[in-house]
Image 1 (cartoon, rainbow, N blue to C red):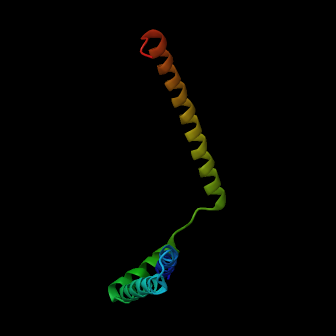
Image 2 (image 1 turned 120 degrees about the horizontal axis):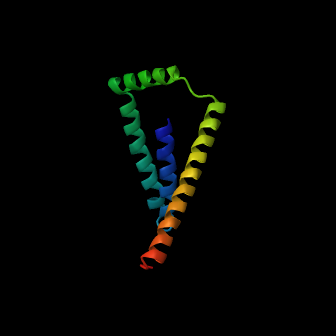
Image 3 (image 1 turned 90 degrees about the vertical axis):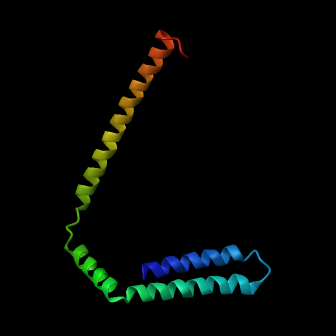
Length: 109
């Protein structure tokens, strides 16, 4: 279903791009044909028994996943942001040190 929605949005964008032409048949039928072809391919692929069994098994596995709580996600995100900020500050200080070293001591700048 999601793939069909993506194809439909893409066909709508194609329709908008083709409206600059003077031929209304071109800007209407080409996106409709593309949507119909991709819809048929998606329908055909989703009804192949091996693919359908895989999708059913994947849905079952997703239901078994233990998702993190909101508090754990917020805590982990804050830790990552803090570590990135500390590392950026540290790298900035090291960069400033190298810049001072090479400009004052070695006179390369």
